[in-house]
Length: 481
Image 1 (cartoon, rainbow, N blue to C red):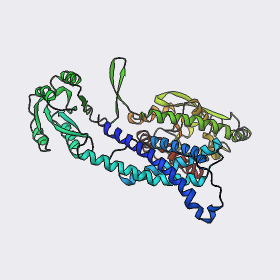
Image 2 (cartoon, rainbow, N blue to C red):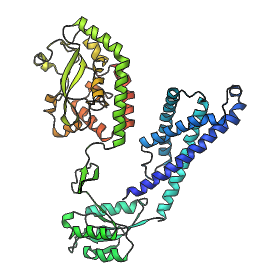
Image 3 (cartoon, one colour):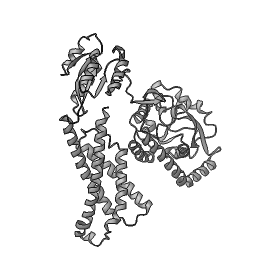
Image 4 (cartoon, rainbow, N blue to C red):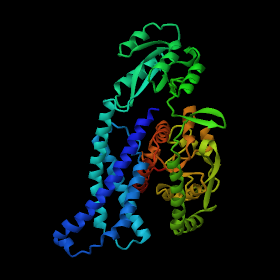
């Protein structure tokens, strides 16, 4: 219901972006055709006919709109600040520029001026920011003046009611005008009634007067902001709103300590409230899996010479198999076999009890810097993280992801506190926030909280940042044990 304003603003921004892209294309062409030739360096350079620039223009436009969608550029609030809009478009331009260059290479577009591509993206950065800001100012102005505003009444008289009404009063950009509130029953609460009236909200009577009010007044929506057990004839309110075609919303502060997103679903004719404990951005999760498949496949192909070399070194320097296979726990406790290059002597698992007292980290994990069970090249493989590369096969199989919490062994999970088990609610990965924040130098509690922070704030952009930061972290070898 309240998303309608944001959705309309998103459509307005999309329209603005398309127009800005068209204007930017012509600006880039005019600059390249009429201004740059005045500079000696560009005077002798090849200039293509107008129609030759159209394919690269379409390709660039596609990547711009795609990256803006992935960066949630069409889910912003109308009150977004100018600098936030500029940063958003700067990220989009940066990503789109490199995607376009990759597309030019893969599609083998011959008639392409990289100067034109650069001019196009620079033009869009400023024209797009300016036009989006104008849309924002115009949209906010219309909301403040009540244009297209919809009327809303609230049922309730509690702390939750007061919080909701305070939010509606303070935010003039919701697209709703509060007509007033109704008591949920005949009983008049002490204190709360006057507190709500002090907000300047009109008291419209008790719940029994709601039907006649909806029938004679212009009301677009009803919001129930009260414990449903305190509301008389709750089902009748639902039926009433359905018969009159009035939207109905309910506050879901039934469980005050739960802050998880809530979705409505239907299984056949059965309505369900879905409390999501993990990210539910289906399209982005699909892209994440697609990226995993592509990266792991090409990673295995490109690194196959290194795999062969490491396998030979392992066999030459120590007795035992090339790979170390260990049972780990993945998504929501699913067990799988994790692959690593063997870095320890044969039967190292059986010798663990002898050196457990040397453990250098807290919590239910075991790590020491100079493990006596390491093979001659085991220390190097661990320090460089080369021993982890066979997990690309786990990624390709779908048991792991490139980015995600590291997969624990079952015995570790048995010692987890209950809140720590939530790290299993997302597919495990090769690298995560822990990997770029000090690795084994961090205490176990910090490690767990970093994993939960990743789950709560997950996005493709965060994955990209982690991947880029993992490279220097691995090269430095800091915190590796």
